Image (tube, rainbow, N blue to C red):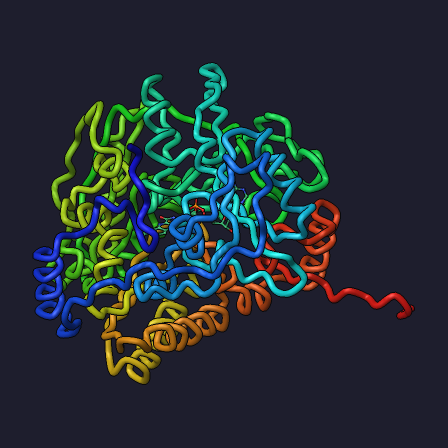
Length: 547
Ligand SMILES: Cc1cc2nc3c(=O)[nH]c(=O)nc-3n(C[C@H](O)[C@H](O)[C@H](O)COP(=O)(O)OP(=O)(O)OC[C@H]3O[C@@H](n4cnc5c(N)ncnc54)[C@H](O)[C@@H]3O)c2cc1C
């Protein structure tokens, strides 16, 4: 029998933390953070309201209206989603969940859903953290059909000359990496949600992998994309580069299910790394670590890992003792010698006041646990950081159960404004935490570094007031997001816009671009059926006699 995903939160039903471990975690959190309460049990799945759409007999095999499946597709994985799932709050699930197994079946489902006047939400792994799959679609629809793409999960072709692979949109990280590994290749796209994230979801959200520099965003990997839209197939050519006008792929990248259902893509793959060199460097301050990271990327070096942790974050993850900021540094290559690169990077760190540990060189393990590879098994010398990275998705569910408000938010900013933005965002979040939670911690790390700037990533942990978690979180999120925009940053570096980031995304984007996006959507989706409410609102309908 196949495993069933939990109806709420992360992972599978057979992966629950045993009660004893939850109790131990609660005790450890109280010890370390001085907050968190008794362990609360998740509410059972309630009976859901009857679906508003009837599945036609010819598609019945592909359509699921069971309470479990509808509940599982009602939310993604943000803190708000976890809390609502935990409490059994399923007041607004999709009416029908479709599970097409190929493009022909997807086409049939789309045709039926559009004909039935439904809104349609493409669904990958459901790991999104911004309300992108939640069926809040507004008025004017007969119901909501969520299309789960996970049955389209094959690696269809591998071009070993051009080093590219044609992969179906529903393939998760482990599934596609296993198929590529047989050929000595890797997509080398390792987000923390690697285990459940799908390729289509990554493209639709412009996801970021955990490599700190160079090729790490899914944008860099995409050679061509194929999608079904209500107006027909949208497929681009495989090209290594093209200057032919606005790139069709650039519109699908980040389209978040609003322009079409991505069915497959050709993506650039690489040979698996054969050598790794890594170390950690301590810095007396986060600012000194930033100077070093900037010097490294601006020198032309492209470390696979160049992740800078605040001292407190290093302590919380067990990677440091809380007295120094910590830079995790690693280089990897399939062919080139990495010894020189790490030597040069360490020299730049020394010039910025860093204290490096002796670099380690190694050959990566041939096989291995995908999750650990995804977490940088080969990259991070700080084993406890790596363990924390792997455990995090599971831990988030447990934190809800023990009354800890936990969430992350992230942005990107050019170097000269980084210090100001980091300080103002952290202060805004702390102030909101003081007001609505009575305290809590805010820590920061740089997840990605570019020659012209960096992506700061904030982690918030605070005492939750049971039953009031959503209001608490909304207050913190509002304060932090406003500070991000005021500080000149983007509302998201890699977590997408969804429904949750709309107010700030609308502030960020140019108005003529918003109009162009609306026009593009109207052209491929005239009924405005695909994921309404995400990225852009349906323009008000003109009444017949207005001229
Ligand atoms: C613990 C945790 C860690 C995370 N770490 C990272 C990280 O390191 N990097 C990162 O970038 N993100 C991360 N995320 C966020 C999330 O994993 C990404 O946004 C991811 O790309 C979503 O992919 P998915 O397949 O789960 O898509 P879903 O969550 O199912 O959908 C996300 C959006 O994409 C659309 N969509 C999905 N599939 C398709 C398709 N085939 N065609 C058209 N539209 C589609 C949906 O309609 C929705 O708008 C993390 C999330 C969690 C919970």
